[in-house]
Amino acid sequence: MNPILAVGSVAFDSIKTPFGEANRVVGGAATYFALAASFFTEVRIVAVVGEDFGANTQKVFAGRNIDLTGLETVPGETFRWKGEYGFDLNSRETIYTHLNVFEQFKPKIPASHRSSPFVFLGNIHPTLQADVLDQVEKPRLVAADTMNYWIERTPEDLQRVLRRVDVLLINDSEARELAGETNLVKAARKVQAMGPKTLVIKRGEHGVLMTRPSGGFFSAPAMPLEEVFDPTGAGDTFAGGFLGYLASCENRDDASLARAIIYGSTLASFAVEDFSVDRLLRVTKDEIDARFQEFKKLTHFDAI
Ligand code: AMP
Image 1 (spheres, rainbow, N blue to C red):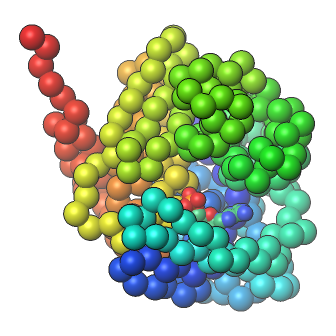
Image 2 (image 1 turned 135 degrees about the horizontal axis):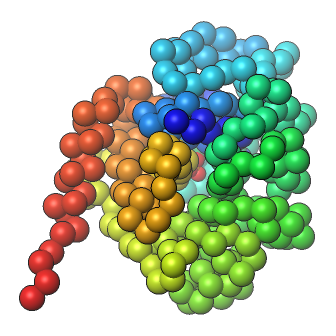
């Protein structure tokens, strides 16, 4: 098994959707990522929380294949974020972002984690992402997330780190903005030229589009669900399922990458079925594998 080093936020979120509200619940990109990826391999979290996070560490991470050596607890308050969703759940407004202890966050990779073969750089300042890469020894695969904030404000720092990234996972508007190109196919080619040979473009309820290192694209829909309560963390959960599967299967050919996309989509489809990480805490490996098979039925058709 290939352990994954995952750097990103561990947070308290407040969320409002048309179906209800949740206040000060556990969230954060690294949290969603780790819960999803830990179904496939060991995840080594590098993040920071405040002393107020308390028993949540045990409640959320204990008993899973998650190593917490790199999760620092420091005096002060945990990172807090509030988001509010519109009626169709596709539009989201950030009500506030309180960095709190995250403001001084300088990822320190424990010595025991420096040779991690897989690295996931969550959505943090690109110079911090580069800092993490400077502390690890020749990982076999580096995956990263970013967002419009860094694309607009720190473009040179972002370009420098992209040269060192194998797989970039971003949403469609971020891909267009990063490339300065409205056509998604052309945008994908431009982003590939910046470094990441595999680009995974997340399109919310419309699914995912991935460039194949061998050329061409692979595309998958999102699972049509009757119950969608809270889309928060769907992207990070997708990344966890995707990278977790890749780390566990030792292969990076087209067929493995396609299966990784379906595992990512499967995990994300569970995450949105309840608020916060609640559904991810309840889901079983059998349920995951059963839904993976449903995806096959959803997309299969016979040639004429
Ligand atoms: P997603 O829905 O995939 O965009 O992920 C939402 C998660 O990211 C929430 O749990 C938030 O706590 C976390 N988050 C939101 N904004 C930021 C930020 N600026 N930096 C780090 N994490 C964030």
